[in-house]
Length: 296
Image 1 (cartoon, rainbow, N blue to C red):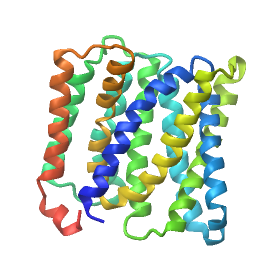
Image 2 (cartoon, rainbow, N blue to C red; image 1 turned 45 degrees about the vertical axis):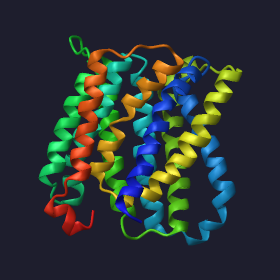
Image 3 (tube, rainbow, N blue to C red; image 1 turned 180 degrees about the horizontal axis):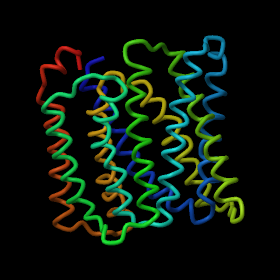
């Protein structure tokens, strides 16, 4: 598959991820964070197992290890990000989570020991500036939620990097489905741990129509379908370019908030979005010599 087609899929995924904020916000009104994540991944796991259970005959130690590693990073990122939102502002959370675009090149180099092209570094710097302008975070008083969200950012950077390491150039349809199933199961175990360690004394669950809609969207669309697409298509791009594309998530989240919640875009939002998008374009359009040699 051509790289631009795969990256278009990643962009469409990012648009949908932007909508998940609205659904998650609605769902958390009636459900504790850890329990919400457990239910979300339970839906995704059930669908995955019902569709791909026959593929377990192809599993081996390497696939099992890779799926568990991805799932622990996946679940850890979700858990820390969700709890962080309890203590910090949406703008701070959006900016800090977006910092994965800055951390991913370092994670990529530390894990894969591959050089990062000059234009990708420039694109990352531009995107980081755009994120700052767009979210306008308030760091006068850094709180516990900011630190939790920063930790989740490290998980996302490693998740994107290991996704490349485990899938690039050597993945079958069966391996893809097994990695998806194992990710959900491992992520659910992390959420279950969070439920007992953090939420156990204050578990909240009210099965309202809003919660059901929220869980169905995030469980079926955002978790099952998007994780399947992510596991399938990121191998045709690079971790750095994927992180740059995913950095657009706060922009799309704000657009959905503007449409459905009546939030207003200010001049800084438009400027930041434009700068962020230019960083993605610079990294994607201008080819480095290292990128050409690696075929990406």
